[in-house]
Length: 173
Image (tube, rainbow, N blue to C red; front, side, top):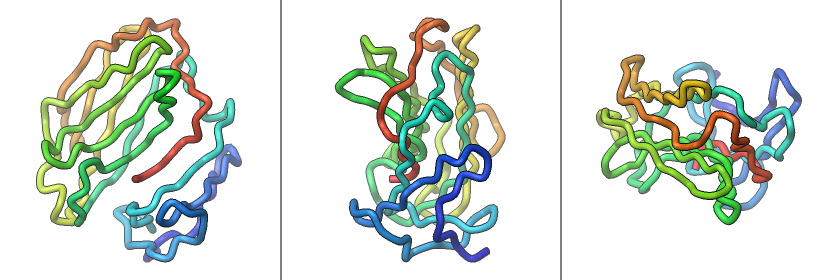
């Protein structure tokens, strides 16, 4: 497909709402994607909170195909942080350094982890596959860029601590 204009969850029914210029609306700038259609994430998609998308104490893997022509400070991938409550998680590419960042909050603090590798040429509209995985039992997280490990970290949060937040799940940004 040459772009996506709808936000449907094919598995759990947690459909999202496209937010265009911070106002709910129809995505008008869908773009060709790496796998099927994609959104031009100068916009975001907001998915209401639900137990179906709460991580709790589960392991996690977040991955995305990213490409950008914009000089924004952050290329948002996933954000489910409640800053005030210091709970939740986020995954993004920091534009200037091109490092991957993962933020996790356990209710007492938000901790940011940074990849040792960088996403090459993120501003040339070259697609890159980025990912972060976290094994809660071992507390080990690993970043990946284009399939290769790009750094590991030890999660500060105890495996038994719930990192769910009541915030909506934001895709893009």
